[in-house]
Length: 159
Image (cartoon, rainbow, N blue to C red; front, side):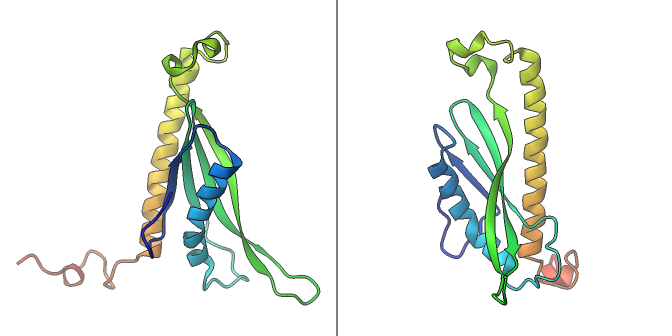
């Protein structure tokens, strides 16, 4: 989970055999530069926009985990100034296909084909949501250069 120097990740993706504390810490560390940029000039008296978070996707042998990383302002006490903290939470866990489960797990009734079809549908919706969020973050963090994004003057005329 590395990014080029100066790059701000809009989504963090990584693989691990298990969703361990170490894997989660590495993912969170990769998201910090983007979160720091989000709050760098932010007035703490104004609530952050709802899209101020970074998705994380971690896959393991049996699951795909979706996490979010977000900034949280902690006000100071007794005259001390407040500070930003960065948090991470697991928001979804999706199972892989039934055929890929180890034989000793296949006998459990919770792993049936209907559950897996519904699970795939939920995963598709989750990934489409992540794609839309990344697009929104990209526009917010890297706005178009001209006053009118679709204006030919801003992008050059097609000569």
